[in-house]
Image 1 (tube, helix red, strand yellow):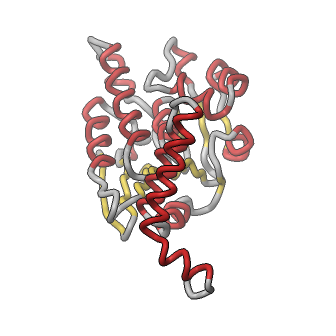
Image 2 (cartoon, rainbow, N blue to C red):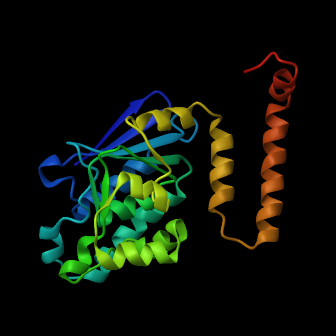
Image 3 (tube, one colour):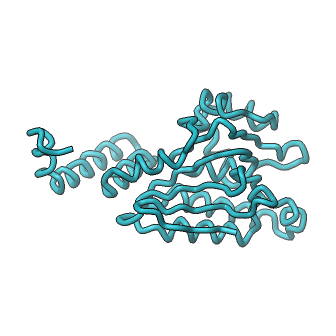
Length: 237
């Protein structure tokens, strides 16, 4: 179900089960984690996560959910995959077209950048049949959109369109071609991308974060000092 291709500096990871709106079975989660982990942070510093067939993902496959004999283990499995995406040493861009539901929203939340097409829609419909997203969504959603928006979105189960998702902060851009954002990011220095992601994802205390920020800046400065001078002198890009 998980299809991976390399395209320049971007590793394209496609959720490829369009007949089920790219719903994820337990084994698919492991494949997805491996596909993201397989990206070389130097040669393919950006992973572009997308869905096939005009949808992003319907989330967890309900046939698999109905048959679970250890639902807690399944939730933990999804959390590990979402954490693997969030902690990857590459930048992960979610390109969201069509429906993102339940676990599909949660996987998108784990990505570093979420970009929607005008046709994208989002919902956490599990509450309608007695469940909720448990792949880290209750942790990440309020961090990203704020507690009030998170509660309204998750408790109502309502469908949010791309424009409202942008207003909420659930996505950062609405564009016709989300892949163009992945290419834009991939044009930058891989080590600078890693440093920025690590610093922005750091949840240590402020003093520790500021010290790490200064150290990372100094390392990059030492590596690119000559190019910085060329830019200053008008000889670089």
